[in-house]
Length: 396
Image (cartoon, rainbow, N blue to C red; front, top):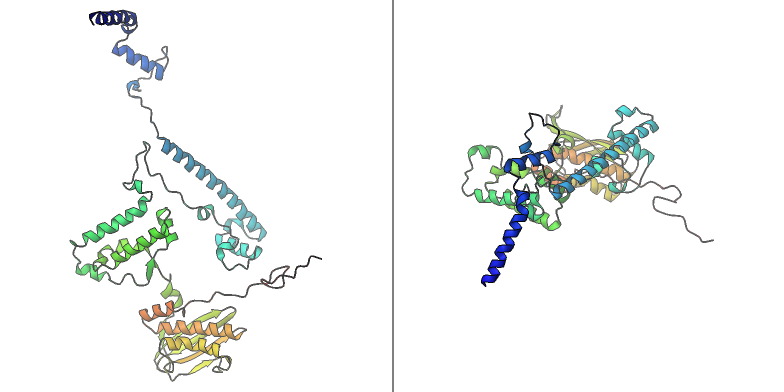
């Protein structure tokens, strides 16, 4: 035991003698000078007086941040290339249509595409389009972490931080209702703020959150938002709720519903409206406190001999319980009994809606009385017998 300890001490003494000549010349000051000369300048050059060589730091970016920056740079380059191609195509299209490229707007582009590339497909998504790259490519989510790799959001581990942040906010607001008081000022702002609106669709919610929302997630979102909106104190969170709602019919009151005026002869309320169906156009005037007069083109219902056409004309009056209680006068132009009946029906529904309350107007809208029928006859395709019919194929 003593012999082994003696050998270990002897080996340590010899190793100390071997490395000590290399360690003695290096003091603390010499070590700093050696590092500065290696990292900043050579031994023969002098550093500027304004630079502090002892505080140079190298900013290290995490690998995740480097990948994000590379992908973001590639996405920006791709958008720039597509923008350049779109601008070039816009100018070519303007020259083809004989228009000025400087004033050729997106509306002109849509008209030119529909003229040059006519399509009989019913779905608008399947038709050829030419849009800016920002409308075609989905937006990219910004970086969710800093340069060191630390996440910004406290719900980063969920994979859907923005979505679960909304659920967390809903739960917090529901819990706070127990200690919050609704004042008269809150009630004065309106408690029926949900009328005429609906929740955002799943695709609209995805565009707002810039996250993938599944059907299950969307159903959970709607259930919780309904619970929040149905609370007696929901008016306190009106701004938060309306952030995720949209109007059912944008510009409904301004565009579809005409103004009510007084009849010049009797002074009773009356409203005039226009309607269209295919190529037919109709103008109808409805007067209250009438005798049930129904006159179209000065011939009553003679232009609508079929039972289905007359049912179309009477359906708005039956729906609002005004059959035989108002006078209806109007005119219609166009070819086709069904198209003329549809045009008169739409104009009559709009005129009746102007004489009704808001809740009845909403019921008429939900029943489809105030909706324009966009259906048209599909055009015949070149090389075919009709819109869909093909020529009989024969092998020989």
